Amino acid sequence: HEQEVQVDFNLQVTEDFTWTLHYGGKKLKYGSGELLNSLPEFIKSVEHLCIALTAIDKCKVCIGNYDNKFQNLMTKEHFRDSGSQVIAIVDTTLVGNRTIRHSQCEILILADEVRCIKCHEYRKRLHMMVSRLKQQQHTDTTHPSSHANYRFLTPSQLCSRLRNLHKEHENVRRKYERLKKRLALYCDSDGGVEVDDTLHQDLKVIMQENSSKFSLSPDSFEKVFWEQQEQAASVQKASLMRWHPLMIKWCLYLRHLSGSAYELLHNSGLKLPSQRTLRDYSYISPTSIGFSNQVDQQLMEAANIAECEEFQKCVLLLVDEVHIKEDLVFDKHSGELLGYINLGETNNQLLDLERLVSDDQNQELASSIIVIMVRGLFTRLCFPYAQFSASTLSGD
Image (cartoon, rainbow, N blue to C red; front, side, top):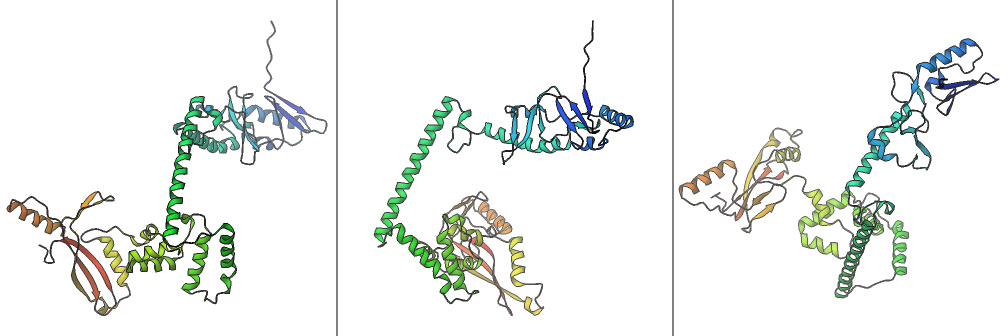
């Protein structure tokens, strides 16, 4: 009975003393990896041959990436990058199991290593692919916004996807018709003039060609306003517009004078930031009843207390009353009902005690706001410091 001989590797030396290593159907040469670079480039003696064989015998094969979590990715034999170049392959010739191996895998590594550097670096990309595959499996493949390929959908999923796309198309069409009718009604009621595409493009060209002919100072607000109007007219969506800080300050000032007047200018054809955009710049801190540490910090910055002389730190506290409508408002940020009398923690407890003694459990709605202002005696400081909701100025 003859025993079958198994050859692990084959080292072939040519006439010019160069060598080729055949390992598991792979051809490896000098320069194919860090380990093979440590071997003699030319085998010219028995000593060189012994060095090469000893080094090869001590090494092992790179296992690649055969983890169980990567098994779902092995449905294809090649992995390509964005340039359609093969960057990794599914290999079964060396380790016995299906494994994902980098196209520049060194094959042979030292005995204390697990995989080569190329396969180790490619594991990050494989983890991203596994995460993306899980997200696709958890998303509804029949939703119109799904990016699932039609090839991987069942006939029932294809029918559901088609119905959802048809519904979305109808919703978009109805919305378009409503907006078209509103625009036509707006133009007819306000005496608007409809221009064709040719005239529209001519007006834009005239505006762009003559923008440099205006004798405006480069640092003036008029120059900034003209450039902002030109830029806003050229963008496809209002959300893509980036407003200049001077425009934001000017619009905030206009809205502070009159919100309705600003809305009228905004709808008249001028390109101005929306109320929602201005709200992001005006409400920099949440409003609250009573005193706040954040307001204290703003007061210190507004007074520039670090550079003030001692006499400039003298201020007056002014108390004023603003009448408001009695009503309740729900604050979605804090989850509180606003509109009840709120004079601070200590005064609120006294009011609760007074209602308890008088056997009156009804909480009274506020009809006025008490505002405490800080005014500088020797500076122009004017700062609204705190506010309290009450029924009268006396705090009753």
